[in-house]
Image 1 (cartoon, rainbow, N blue to C red):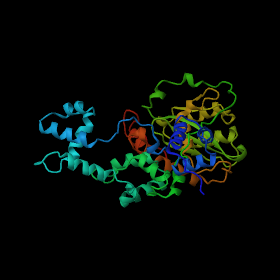
Image 2 (image 1 turned 60 degrees about the horizontal axis):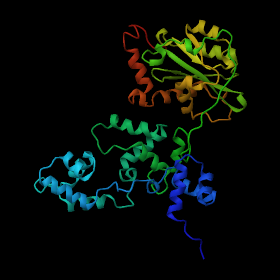
Image 3 (image 1 turned 180 degrees about the vertical axis):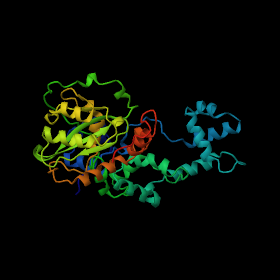
Image 4 (image 1 turned 120 degrees about the vertical axis):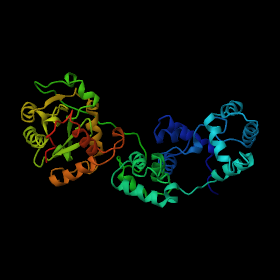
Length: 397
């Protein structure tokens, strides 16, 4: 004799615990199931709460046939959309959409029976996933995921790349669901490795904790010019190191605040102060003066020669408060995008050409805060502004 089926109420209660922020083991114990069962439910849902377990109000989100008949009668009496909405207790947008969907012929107008039949057809499950049904769209989404574009970047960029093609539209949540939720199957599960986190399940992001002692003579971020904050003027940079196994190797990351433009520092030997000074000087002096205004760094010992760097690059250097990585938020975000360099590996063996390739890939990705332009496009536009970049000044090669 098999085990009794777990009731719907238990599963709904499990997801209620998850929704309140409890970990899976605690939620499973609270509803009386094993953590193995809890993990199975969570894994099958891809970390996404199934819609049927959401705590909804007692009133159905869908219009009933009685409400559709009421809409038909009141429209025939020439009542407006808002008057109908007030009468049936629905929003005007709901009534407006219903009238559009349920009107098949202008001559006959809205028909409750026709609208109900169409609604029943739309609600049939299971449905073929959008990205499977529209193979052209699905292929495009897969291609962009392989280029390390996020679901939101892909979704918003479709409006730019296919402005006149309504078939080439998909929400970021649909892409996530197609990747994470079993049964959707429109995208290969392996493509989750192309996401920023590389995780096969949705999880809260963990924030890193930092770091060390203050430098003598360092200028605090609190004294940084106000113009740095509004990102209106290019040339203000944030920097840090990403380190390899045992902190024995590192790559320097520099990101420009206004555009998100990224440059990487090649540190093939060590990441001591002299190595960082030489790499920083060689990299930053390639830029025009208008792109070398300030640099914000944390208080790592690699910046012990900050006075020499400031003199060589003609930049003002500012340091964050101890244990305050969020004060370099743009750089922290950029470091999170660098999935090309696995943790706990030796980073000293990467060739400078590969670092250039990685930086170029990041600089050509569309960004939400840039209205879905890429950092390279945004930087080019800023450099073409004569008020910011005087004529005759160009980005150094």
